[in-house]
Image 1: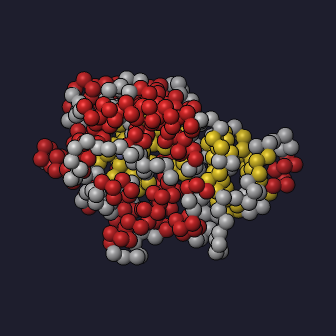
Image 2: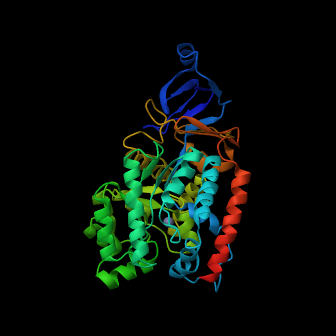
Image 3: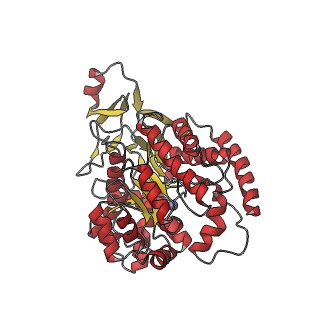
Length: 446
Ligand SMILES: [Zn+2]
């Protein structure tokens, strides 16, 4: 198809907003960006998709999420309100994920994939746990992802919190899924990481088994130093801090994603930078759990590849951008903290690099010849001058997720004029609600 009549945000270096240009999309890729008349005359057979003056830009990317987070929405958590992060894990997350059955895995995923499509988030890095149905759970998620047409890398959160048998099942599930991805079983839109829950729930022997099963194939995806409890646990058991423990074990590296890194020392920041490990930041989740504030700017200064994720909150990623921007200013009591370009380094540049690496060099998150055709239309009409230089602030203060009208991933139109073409949101919401009720009932018994 040829996409005409848009203001094309390239997210190139330097960023540009192109007018009077059109995009040629073929075989899932952007094959050309040229003057509309040239493209039309060279490719008269191509279908025309008229952007009607909207912003046309790369789809958003989320570096760390949990589809199962969907079922926490509106949930009454049994017992006294949690006083700290450890209690939040024990009272909410470790019961919620245990309450998931197969339909719970499927419909929590579909619910957040519908949300992602609607909000233009076309690439997601999911971190999955369902201790009551581990075997095959990543296949259920993969089916949901393929039904949605979006792009996702999946993994299972290995943990010792439910005993050795379930830890081993988690290891097998990662290994099996990684082999399937390598064999092309799930198609081009699915990739794999090797999941670990967090240092505090993974024993040394389990970590060794994970390394052996993975055998250098995929990057790891784990929480790290999200709450102070993770550091206290590691220091008391191993005499070293979480990132030091992961570094010594061989978990860090160019392909590994660590989520959070709230409580890290300068030495741990140095280890992240030297090893080339991705560090995903989730400000909304950190604020909600009251765990503290990530030293994002210090990490960027030291060369850490800081990305942006949402930790299972809604895939309205521009909200996450805005919280990333506001939180540092408030926390540091300095309005100069975290400017718009810093947010772009996380949410656009580093997320794009992470996705590009994960998809084997296929350029994701950019509008250029040869890049993946992951494209959204945004019905935004500025009330002040807008250009490439001030675009970050237009996005932060003006873009809202409901302004996304069309979502395309891998060259396939998934939402057109706000209508989802492959997911039935009404049916998904009904089925998700049924599964959530079952899950919440089980949670009461744990
Ligand atoms: Zn998380």
